[in-house]
Image (cartoon, rainbow, N blue to C red; front, side, top):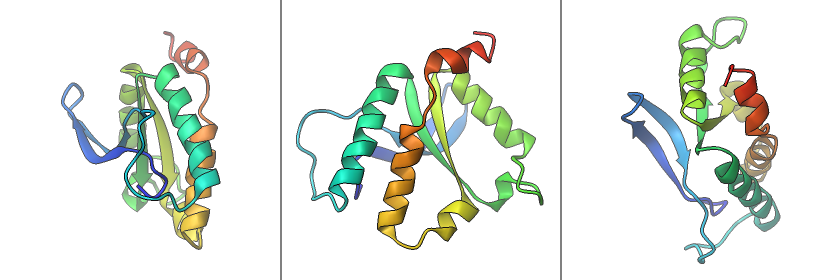
Length: 133
């Protein structure tokens, strides 16, 4: 919310039977409530969200705690499967590993990190091609 991006926490996707940590909602041109703390970073993140909403059928952020990884910090197969299922229904998934998030010092760094992740989403065509679609 501090970045001015509308979202829903713990959204259930009945079609898949999964809950996603954060579902990003489409950005409208109407003014959003509340002041933005990080105007430049928020503007960059919003532009990335707009592009993702055009390119993908949805955008989710998964905040992955320790239970999503093995001892070597590799994603567990169950988490990888959920990601594949989300991609198959057209969702872009932005993953936030807990150790990277915990290493960030303040809200400004966290906002910049999220903006960078959102800005680095691959084009959908290449991600679908890698899935045989």
